[in-house]
Structure formats: structure tokens, C-alpha cells
Length: 410
Ligand SMILES: Cc1cc2nc3c(=O)[nH]c(=O)nc-3n(C[C@H](O)[C@H](O)[C@H](O)COP(=O)(O)OP(=O)(O)OC[C@H]3O[C@@H](n4cnc5c(N)ncnc54)[C@H](O)[C@@H]3O)c2cc1C
Image 1 (cartoon, helix red, strand yellow):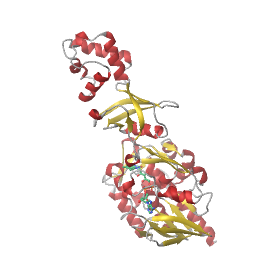
Image 2 (tube, rainbow, N blue to C red; image 1 turned 90 degrees about the horizontal axis):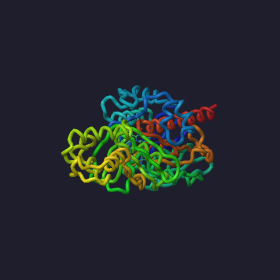
Image 3 (tube, rainbow, N blue to C red; image 1 turned 120 degrees about the horizontal axis):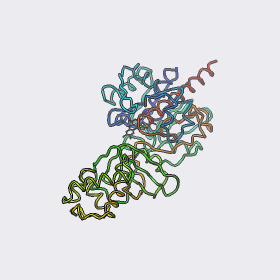
Image 4 (spheres, rainbow, N blue to C red; image 1 turned 90 degrees about the vertical axis):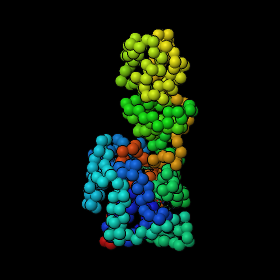
């Protein structure tokens, strides 16, 4: 059986290897000068390749497509991903939050292992091969390359990724391929990306906070909260909790973001703490006392947002002003403009409509056509979930193709 895989990223490479090991004649078409360009930059260059969790818990980290992914994730689990790479000679470590990395801390271990396995399994890897059009004539698929060449096969696997970080090659080409075969595509939007605010937060750029709660109150719908680490950027809020919220807010605009800088203390306890601090240093400037509560630049920003003069003497702060300070620390409010752009987004939410795919990622409209990885309307939180989705869908597809080949032989 001849199989063409378009895209040499995480899902395409894994699928090509497993199909070739199952006896198929596989051609992998990758438009870049090398495979795995995005994989190389994952996990800040360390590649968080999966979340070390049993399938049921793993699926709780999925934002869109949980039901669709169940079968794929149960049949190729995070444990299987670990075994695959360990068998390819890559020692792994599991860190805080069940995050699995190569022990070397280098994503190149993962890309090299995949390249080696592609070669050893006999996949014909064709680099600089951008597919511009796809079609099916009778039982034969054709992938037309930008150079004019045509590659034909019995099976076509689209593994072109989403639209985020387009510099890595993922420019959303797969959506056009899907549409050309009559598939619906759920509007792709950036996910796991900073939240842009109307307020100018550039003075806070680079300040990172631990143990804070960020609550989003979208223009429509229920509020959502996340507790943990956050980072201010030049244009908004980032860091783990903001990225997680972006996965929930990327189909809305407007609304507000509420940052509780001291979630461990309720307003009453915080007020008591502030009163204590004030009593100890009643002749000091306000900013020098509140400095104990907040990092330097954020301290000044909070005072400004509370409408308090930083040089006001503590002994002249009124009860109403103190309450305003406490309110601002407990609820620093920002107007939410939108999530950041695709260029900065870790993943794309949206893609090929899952109802039109079988659990093994085959098109219900065009037999022999498959969509795997991020090109589908499945995505998850950070923590190795998205790469596991790529690997699980790749394995489900490869198994389906192998079973079809067996049936044909019989
Ligand atoms: C900065 C960053 C860090 C990340 N870190 C992590 C992490 O640590 N853990 C995690 O789980 N996830 C992480 N992700 C997400 C993860 O990388 C993706 O979800 C995953 O790579 C998707 O795999 P894929 O195979 O579907 O697509 P991709 O890996 O994007 O691969 C698609 C491939 O298709 C090729 N292609 C596209 N169009 C064509 C065409 N027309 N012709 C030929 N080739 C084509 C592209 O060049 C590309 O090589 C990160 C993403 C980013 C951007």
C-alpha cells in the first residue's frame, strides 16, 4: 500500500514511521529544509513530549475534542509515547506537573530519534516539498507539489499542523486541503497565548508572580479562574495561568480580567495585615510600606490604580483609601481585548471538524484520507498534552492503515 504523509512534524513523522513499520510504502512530504522544526522549539527547546498520566486523567487536560480523542489516547497512551522514545535510545525524565522531557534537556534528542526511525523504517523523506494541492481521482490520491511534480498514493495523511508559529512551516495549508475534499473547518483561533489588555501594562513587562488567581469574566458566559504563576508582558498577561485562560477565551472578545494578588488572604485579613504594617511605620511614605506586599513596579502601579499618592504619609491615609488599596490588591481589573496573535500562540484551536472523522482519524467523506495532529479541531492545555495528541492520532491512523492493508492482502 502506498501512503503519502503531508507534513514532517510530530504527528506526520510518527505516523510515517508506524505505517512503514507496518509494511506500507511511505513518502513523507515536508516543505521545510528539515523535519520537526516546531518540535525543535517545543518546551523552550527541551520538548515536553507528553504528560505522564493514565489516559483518563490525561483526557482531563484536553480543551476541545476530548470525546473524539478517547479511543486514540487509550490505544496509544502517554506510557506508549515514553516507551517509543526510550526504545529509540532517548532517556526521559518526568518533572513537576507530570511533564516528560528528554533527560538531556534537549529537544534535538527527540527530532534526531524521529529522523533516525524514519530512515531505518525506510520512509522516503522528501524535504523542500511543499504540497500546494491535493485531489482524489478514482482510488488514487494525488499531492501536487509547488514545483509541479505529482505524488500519487492509495492513502493520503494530512499532518500539516495548525496556524500558530507559522515560521516553523505550520501555515494552515491543511485547512484548504480539507475544504477541497468537502470537509468543514471550525474557525482556527490562537490558543495558549497571552491575553491582551486595554490598559497599558508595559511598565510591568517581565514581572512574574506566583500563587495568584486570575479570573476572566467574558462578555458572555460564565467566569473562569486559574490559580498559579503569571507573567506581565508589554501588552498584557502571560505565564501558565493566562495561557490556560486563553484556551477558554479565544472565541470571545471583551469582558474583564480580575487579578487577585493575595488569594490566600480574604479582604478582611488583608486589611488587618495592611493596618498592622501601617501601625508599625506610620510616618513612612505609603509606597515604602506597601512595598512589603508587592514587587516594586507592581507596587507603584497598584497604588496608581487605587488612586493613591505613592508619597502620601501612611498616618494620613483614610479608612476609605485603605479599603480602596485592599480592593485593588484583591481585584486588579483589566479590560480584555483579545487573545494574542497566531505568531505567538503555542497551539491553534479549531480545524477539521471532528464529527467528519472516525476515531482513527479517517475522513467519513473520502475513504483513505486522514487528518492527524493539530490540523484537527482538537487541542489541550500546556504540559505535553498537545504533542501526545499528535502522537496518539498518528498511531490511530497508522493502525487503521495497517489493518486496511491486511484486509486487502487477504
Ligand atoms: C513555541 C512552542 C512550544 C511548544 N511546546 C510544546 C511542548 O513542550 N509540549 C507539547 O505537547 N506541545 C508543545 N507545543 C505544541 C506542539 O508543538 C504542536 O501541537 C505539535 O507540534 C503539533 O504537531 P503536528 O504534527 O500536528 O504539527 P507540526 O508539528 O506543526 O507539523 C506540521 C508540519 O507540516 C509541514 N507542512 C505544513 N504545510 C505543508 C505543506 N503544504 N506541504 C508540506 N509540508 C507542510 C510543516 O512545515 C510542519 O513541519 C509547542 C508549540 C510551540 C509553537
